[in-house]
Image 1 (cartoon, rainbow, N blue to C red):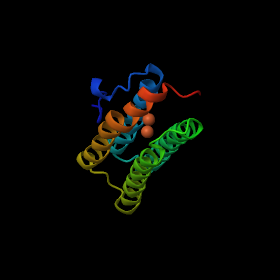
Image 2 (image 1 turned 120 degrees about the horizontal axis):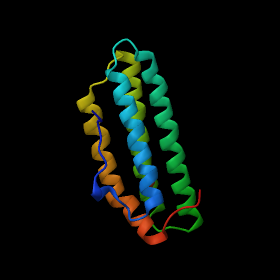
Image 3 (image 1 turned 180 degrees about the vertical axis):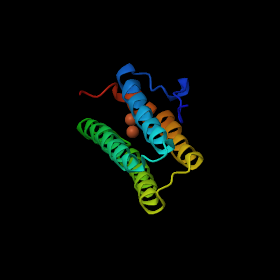
Length: 134
Ligand SMILES: [Fe+2]
Ligand SMILES: [Fe+2]
């Protein structure tokens, strides 16, 4: 059972961007699935690393795109990205310490952020500028 599910209201109106966001949700679900498997906890760190790398790359691409277009809310949008990266770092540190993931907490912390960020910052950005080049 996946932890997070794509919802229609996550759509930013650009299929390529929605696709990337779906991939990030899949990676979160992979961390969750791995954490639920008994005896394979070493892998969770690896999955967290992959998730962190993918999210960082996605954010960097968006930020470069906003910068190139002198997007008016670059600063605020970037600040929200930093909040999520901090949140992920906290989750990774907690896991390193306790070797346990509370899936309800993971879901609550990441789902709240994703829905809010997709529906607000990303929707505004892609409505204004369309999709970014890959
Ligand atoms: Fe995004
Ligand atoms: Fe964003």
